[in-house]
Image 1 (cartoon, rainbow, N blue to C red):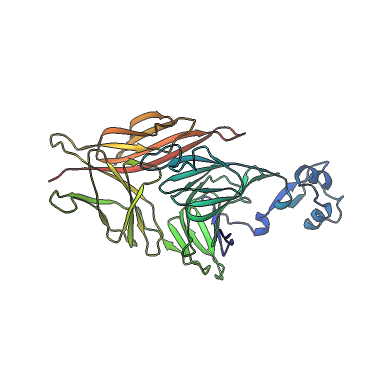
Image 2: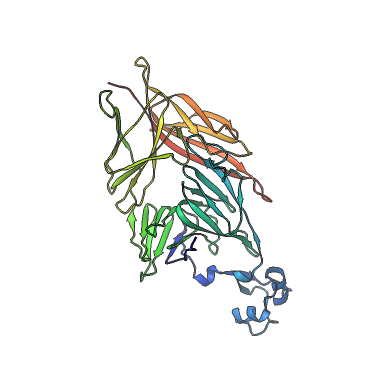
Length: 439
């Protein structure tokens, strides 16, 4: 396989809170050390630098008059490439392969708990969805068919966080990073046509290898994007995205479509398509992508189709809800926030319409998950309907008797990586439930 060249242009993500911009490239590639009493340039190099670094190089980089003249409180700049480092690990934290779930992909090549180090790649087979747990409170969700290489995963001396760089070679990666990352050490996600630096933000990066097109969709934070052919950067805020073409030109900014809302579900036993789901038309939406799954999940399901009209046929509705994940697509192909809409058919005319809803959680691995389901009200606090543990191998279960309405769920996991304390993670989502009856 030909190694792609990186990058054709640069995207800089600004902090979700505070709005501080990235520093210069020289700042990002350097560490900073504050001299203490008794320090010499020699013992600083011995503690923090790789072997073979010449003191004369440090003297020149810091414009020192002599290698013997440093003073307490003075700040030294140390190129990151010269610093000692320890390699870290990523872990396949969750895996969901519809329709059966499971701890491993159907071909057995990808399993919950698999560990990856710098230089290794993960390839997510269709129809599976996976999530990578990275050090420093970072999680990356990968869509079916995605291939991502961990180009860098290491902790440098003098830094408390890992330097992380992921290369998306195909598919879609959705990245969530905690806001506490150092302003000098962004997590980077690259495609052959883009570089995205992340500081306290959540966004999606996709790459289509056939058209050499990258797409960036910002869910929180702000992004300054500049293509190799652009004279100046363009800023993207939350709710906006950009298409970066093969020529390295940023086509953004473009507002992302909103989350779809259900208009109606029609049942006509005499029609060729007895059930039809209709979505409220959305401004800026050219098409609607629909996935279907027998369960509420964190990832979505099997691709049902992409529709030019805000309606689609619902097949085989029964007492157990089918869950449709619907995303509106802009003319450029950028996608907005998805909405999960669960639809069932209720046949009891003597009672309030109710559904059975299945949940297909990511496999929790060795540590059980704690699941909570809440019913949301137009006013007032949510009502807790269920709280239960979910163990490995039992991540698919059903809750019966749910009425029409809006629901919110969450599953809390404890992950333990080698040499690190347990790391608590929350996978959450929401859905609306619509039981229907034939006229």
